Amino acid sequence: MALQKRAWAEPFKIKMVEPLRMTTPPQRQQAMEEAGFNTFLLKSDDVYIDLLTDSGTSAMSDVQWAGMMLGDEAYAGSRNYYHLEEAMQRFYGYRYLVPTHQGRGAEHLLSSILIKPGDTVPGNMYFTTTRAHQERAGGTFVDIIVDEAHDPTDERPFKGNVDLNKLEALIAKVGAKRIPYVSVAVTVNMAGGQPVSMQNLKELRALTRKHGIRVILDATRAVENAWFIKQREKGYADKPVAEILKELCSYTDGCTMSGKKDLLVNIGGFLALNEWDVFEEARNLVVLFEGLHTYGGLAGRDMEAMARGMEEAVQEAHIHARIGQVEYVGEKLHALGVPIVRPVGGHAVFLDAKRFLPHLGQLEFPAQTLAAELYLEGGVRAMERGIVSAGRDAKTGQHHVPKLELVRLTFPRRVYTQAHCDVTVESVYEVFQRRKAVRGLKMTYEPKYLRFFQARFERL
Ligand code: F0G
Image 1 (cartoon, rainbow, N blue to C red):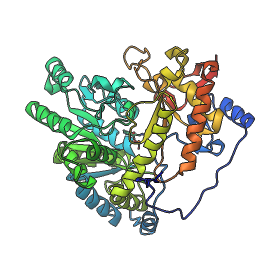
Image 2 (cartoon, rainbow, N blue to C red):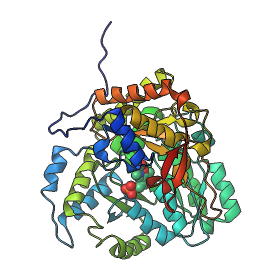
Image 3 (cartoon, rainbow, N blue to C red):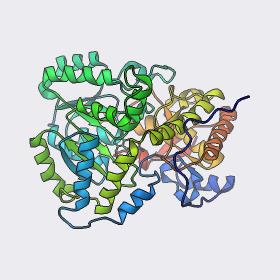
Image 4 (cartoon, helix red, strand yellow):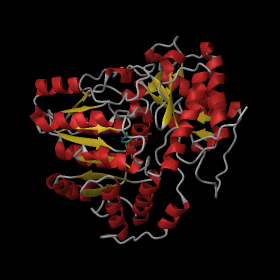
């Protein structure tokens, strides 16, 4: 048999290593109980393979680390700010930049400037912090993602798309004046890292222009989205990812960014805008909440690392390897019959906890349970993305009951090896084989905001 070259093999070698602590099953049992069956409350020292998130957990390159030494820590007018501004304009194409300490800092500024109490903010599925800021500003989030996004077995290529009929119906109902902007995420985290097509963004632009409504992008994983467009959408196969990224942004009026994902840094984010008035207000407000408008809560070295990360993020070999690794894990699990969200998304493989643990009702927290079991099995830390993450309705106080009840195996960029991937697959499969004996959880402590971070549970 001819051996096939692995197309996504890593375009880097490892220069520095960080030792991991191995734990025994009794140690993990104790750690999980102390953490109240919430993987967010585990100590990272007790984790072997950490797939909690791809946020701030990626490995920086030597070029980025070298940039850290070139941090200009002046309070005002740091040279690294100007480098970041130039890079943002070059790769994302927006006019104005407001740095923030991370993505939610940008969401906070944007929501407080644009949303008035009683407004409606449509979006292609919610994200936890994004919706929380929209609601805090007095807005109501309305999900306008295509129906297939809620079906983990649907194989369509762009399950992050906006359903334009839903948007039109919403505009007819509440009026364009009560919609400050459409909030569009690329890729869609909570749907399983699913991409949005260029065609959909173009049509969204045409519709919103007709009604005078802004489109604000959540560009956190836009490079990953651009890669999927290159792979899946007609006419893009031969275009560089950087070019696709810029085209994608051109159909929107601004973006919020968590630099902790695509941009390969441990901390950082920004708000980017094309409208002078909105920018001016953001530049005023950032001083109150983040820091001066030329650092926004970041050190000069952080801005330098982010500017350099931006350049690395769009390298074809990098993004191919990044998504190739996630796909490798997803395809292995799929072949073993483990229920996952299809197609495999950009940053993570999402286990479908409803089908994995069909004997548990949604209020027995199947995804929370599965994430806990996975840790007990192999020291692998994943994240619940189901009813606990969905939280409660701000008005009625009832649980939001999402159709998707998922466990996210999120891959940091450039961090884990193929053997780590294999151990992860083996751990999931071990739990899968004993799934019928798994008991659910009950919530014993529930925080008021973003409860998934700190909630505690006990075994039923
Ligand atoms: N938007 C998306 C799509 C995100 O995934 C995140 C963070 C944010 C905004 C907020 O950015 O964390 O820098 O304030 N997602 C992380 C995750 C936490 O694990 O998915 P932040």
